[in-house]
Image (tube, rainbow, N blue to C red; front, side, top):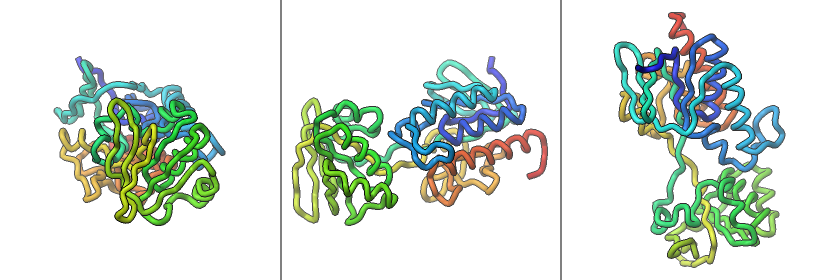
Length: 309
């Protein structure tokens, strides 16, 4: 038997958990399903731009959001694999491992997945020195040498985090100027343990059973940097594979779910929120994600109650 809900939220990041909070407060029987509380926020070393918290670790903020959703009345399932989605008799069935759940509506808030370099050694040495989570793996590199790939906020924040522990951090960026916020740029430029290498592209990651070095191309000159770890921070791509496989959700040219201002999609009864959508003018921030989550919840409530929106 499938357990029935008014609404199922796919994704337990800021957008999904915020949707769960609002849906529960509207009196809807709500289930939030996600691989980890907070999504990619949980991997962020420090958050300094979310109102109400001058500085908080991503893991702390994620836990607070998860606890809030549960306290509001939503069921939250974590570390579950969504294996199948079906639209059946006006309802949506979500298969999670060996369990099945039914809902009148869906909110898709699956967020994004890490963008890969797709160079030799990356896949082979993943978990053996190649990482996409500085908060998770950074503490392992005390007094060692690491490299961070990227030049936006995530990469700069990662480099600053590593500089507190590592003896040397290379920040490798393909452009001639960092694209991080001014305050972060100033910090990283003034950090003595960080060496910024501009106009450079990684070619391959070397190592047998662990990372030993990274080869880069700097304006046609090839260099080999001896490092113990490589942290890849080059952005993310919308995690739409699941919904495009099972639902005929409209995706735009950037791979994002097309949403209307009320967060509705082209599929009746399906709403979307957060980084997986083209909403918020592509400003992928925690604050915009929770805003979209609140709007999606309100729209889903109106849809269920037959209220025009």
